[in-house]
Amino acid sequence: MAIAKAEPGKTLLDPSNHTLIMIDHQSQMSFATKSIDAVSLRNNAALVSKAAKEFKVSTILTTVAEKSFSGPIFDEIRSVFPEHHVIDRTTMNTWEDERIAVEVNKIGKQKIVLAGLWTSVCIVGPALSALDQGFDVYVIADACGDVSNEAHQHAMERMIQLGARPMTSLQYLLELQRDWARGETYNETVQTSIAHGGAYGLGLIYAKSMFNASEGH
Image (tube, rainbow, N blue to C red; front, side, top):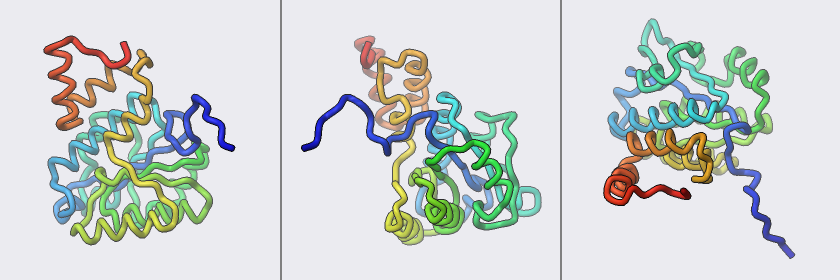
């Protein structure tokens, strides 16, 4: 018989148990992205970046052919990590670049969280490779995009079939916070939610403005 305990499940993310890899959020890659509009994509990339920075998540940033073809990483990411080294690759599969393996092994986390463009190339490659090597893989689906809805959908299905766990940008932020009584990150989580959390953010503005409401306080 199962016994309930007031403790989180082992598959939940926390700030210390995973590595975030943000892959190829670049202008050239986004021009042909049709499964999500550019405004939403940039907003979600900003949300994920701010969540990772706030909670001090081990983060790897990578681009492909930045200088010669694809352009710089989104400023929504660069501005959050101004001093962060961005690994520029030639490989379509990030996981096949030796520098990524070195960074992943140096960080030493079992769980890998992925976001980037395009889902069917830049995300499927590392997701399937990491799964094959025994890592737990999570994909932030709305911080990814592809050339069509079908391409994004089938890429997600392919990864899920092999064990990847899908999630969303706002879910990522709130899963890291998880308890509104965590005062050291409360204010920043609320501000990030207001700035990038869509209708949820509007609800926070309303509740705080009208009632001075505060979750868990």
